[in-house]
Length: 352
Image (cartoon, rainbow, N blue to C red; front, side, top):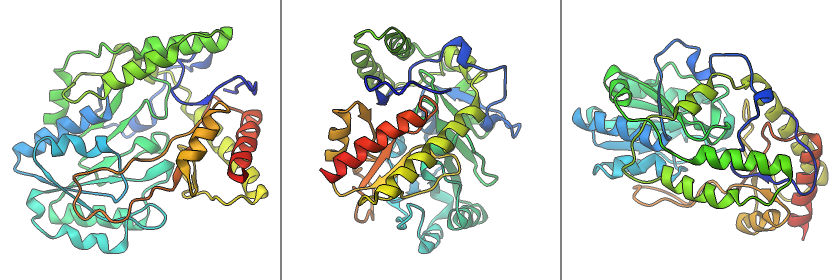
């Protein structure tokens, strides 16, 4: 699963599709190993829309969320007129101890949406809040998008993950839950997204060192997938690909790459630090004074990192927003040489 360390090779951004030599034998993905029934929708936003519609019919209309989140997590609920309230945020991006006190108000109308970010597993506070929610009758949704390599929660009524964030698939989100929502998912039409075409174009461009404009197609197709109101099953190609991805090799590459990059940045003693240490990291997360400046500087060097996330609106009780986070790619496409290049670029940009 190693990549070249050529300086012309872009690091980060959208995945290219895998070649046949990079896939594995038929396997059960990590989220399917508990034996629970799984439905595949086109996006995580769409999975949440189905859940929100189902819970609205049951009279629920209040959502509790972490104090750091993306717009797509709450948009399906706000569209249905729900009230959304922040549970707060601890310094390590988990939930604060006192968040558990917010569960007691109208539990029969309340839903809690939990997420362990950047590959970490749910910590003690996260689990305590989830178990208390279940005891009170609050519905629990677990967003596993950042931990698809090590998913699982025995307390969630619904769990889901958007797969194109960490895996080389054109579309797709898994959803586990009750029969009503899974049946609704099964009746949808299949995705007609052209994002796979963009992934193939990127794969071919990298292989042939061509100047194919795959980026424009990615921009168009990512916007298509995020379109409000869109509701489809995942494409058959995504479902077929999910069954042959080398999950353990991908997880190991992330662990090795993150460890090497972390060591290089620590040795350089730059004014940044890893914010969370995931079981299988989704990214190496840095806290920096000017993440947008760092993002732009690295992009000019062909290294594309993410800022998680722009501040959302429509959430009550949202305190000061974490605007210092920058996520560095460390996935299966890269090797030690690539991480050396990334480390040099980060060090140069931060010290500039």
